[in-house]
Image (cartoon, rainbow, N blue to C red; front, side):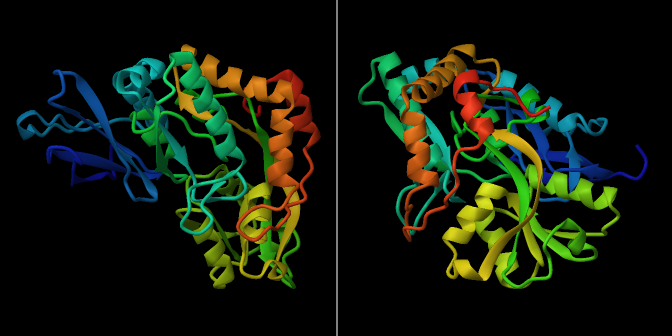
Length: 364
């Protein structure tokens, strides 16, 4: 494995020391560090995210006695294979876990307007938050636990999948795209929205479509499908676009507002949400054709058919009763907090069709 070098990181638990190999030319960033926890003697996998623009290969060591072992692994499928291995080791069936602990942990996003966001210092609100609460209600009923404790965990585009897979939380309803690659690692419920990549620019900008980005800098969120779509578009059309990556949507918007990027590329609905809640909405415009329309779905761990059936059942119930359409109107066609702005986004034909189709399939 020529061209690789190694360094050490310290595991988050028990101070185990591990050597990792870094392979040049790999995209993405994740390291899988496998060690023994003193927890019923069960071997578990602990995920560490590596803040890197390249892929860190692993797993690389076992922590018993700090015995250093290095393992050279082959590239690209590592992220998916490693996450799948972690999932099979860590997870119990979700409903059994909830019943045993009388607790369900759900995630939220801090700036995914109008799906899941925190206006000011308050609790998270949004369309996907309401879906989450409906699902939690069905969990309470199914398990006969009216006093079920609900814990809330903030997640980002980078950590939402690893934290779900390693058991840190149990359900994510937000703005996560259901695609085939992610489907090898996690499961998705019935699609609750369809979105596509567009651009947010300052009003008056000469950027009106993707060709206008030649040689310019574009902001997007690290780990998002938007980053992948934009990099491919730039390469295919020889635009030489430069990218600056942010950890979340609020930081992405700040890059545009502070003139560090000529445009922000995200899903169209997220751009409308960011614009609506900006300090000066009129100073921002959504432009460009829609690239690669894809479904959003609530995300849960793989190979847990009982919990998936419950989550799908809750969403299907909302769709068939008309409650889903009422919630959609509340968040996409009515004034939303904190500023009472109306997004004015009628339900798309794709989503209307899925109220009957109840599809959980990724975009092909």
